[in-house]
Length: 144
Ligand SMILES: [Zn+2]
Ligand SMILES: [Zn+2]
Ligand SMILES: [Zn+2]
Image (cartoon, rainbow, N blue to C red):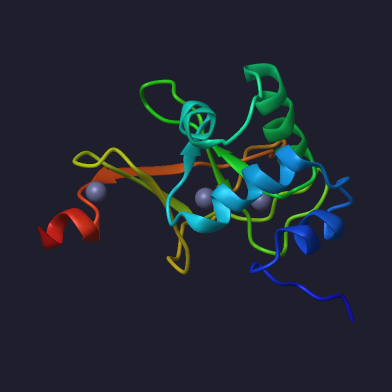
């Protein structure tokens, strides 16, 4: 049986057939340590070491391609990335969960386990992706 664990970045990289490199390990570690989605600049500011923008961009692109993270488009055009669940694989992302953008802290969260409507497309249209973006105040900000 294939082991799936989110506690070990190396295992995750191996499971998604990604060669283990210092930047991949570090970027993945950032995602695993945060409950919210990360933008390119979040990652760039947090990484330790000398990694240029292109290297970070390539790392994120390979993660998306291999089904490790998914992209979340936002209203202001800033794309964020969040860790996928185990069901995603190369070229195939299997999730239709809700994304929530907090207007107070500005963070974006993946909200799992919320039923979302199934959309049937008209004939001639084929389906690639679906995005449910909701906005409001997150639970952390509501507590304060
Ligand atoms: Zn995915
Ligand atoms: Zn918030
Ligand atoms: Zn998500």
